Amino acid sequence: MYHKLFPSQTESEEIYLVVREHWVHLLLKILVWIFFAAALVLFNRFAHANLPNLFLGTAGEVTLLFTQVYTLFLVLSLFLIWEFYYLSTQVITNIRIVDITQEGLFSHTISELHIDKIEDVTSKTNGILGTLFNYGDVYVQTAAAIERFEFTAVPNPAVIEKMILDLYEKNSNFTKNTK
Amino acid sequence: MNLSNPANLLIFGVYLVLVGGLGIFSLFGVYTLVRYGRSTPLVFTIAIVYAFFFLKILAESYQTLSTLLT
Image (cartoon, rainbow over all chains, first blue to last red; front, side):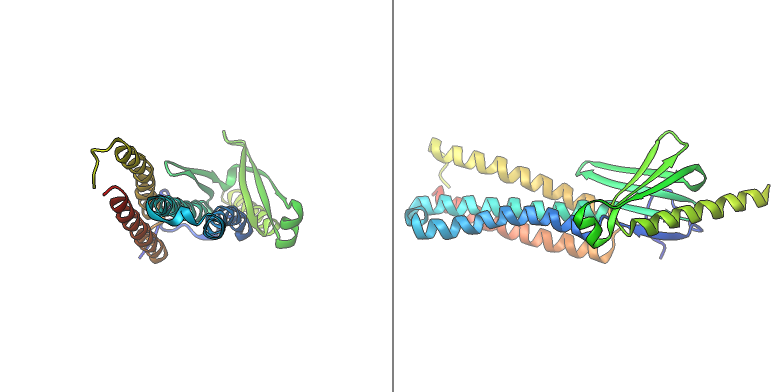
């Protein structure tokens, strides 16, 4: 069965690469989530030891209700962190580059750039984590209305840059030969 | 559940707003994931696992609320 990665994908289009943010970026977001989850665990431990009245009678039920609603919030936020990571992808095909961004629950953006519109490609690795884990940004300068196409925190930025440039050269050679 | 008491009504109202909001975001979260996630087995598995945990904690919290407001 043929599954489309983006709405305008044609059946004959070859997919060369589907890339997401590097897992280290996802891990950083999860670390922030762990901080909030740890706050609940610490609250439970601290309060059980020092404020036992918080867990008795009506106060105990209110505390339990609070921790349950807070847990719901934690579960939802972890789900959304993963969802936004999973739905934000960049796709490179033999015809175009597609940037799909899930910025929020109600904000889904798809930008497309045809290979022949490319003017310049730059890759950038920044920071200790970027250097250690080999991830960074790739900027594609275009001749189209969207001036700069950006792949943020993708793994192997130099390889992606080379891939886009090779595709551009292959496409321009093909165009020259067909003229 | 006794809602004739103003304090109980207030607790119930706050609970409804908070959990209602989380529920709506969850619903749209699952909808967005299934809609844009190209219906892969991974997407369905994550959506089902999430829905299971969310509903389980939701049921527990409602049980606690019922006991509290009795």
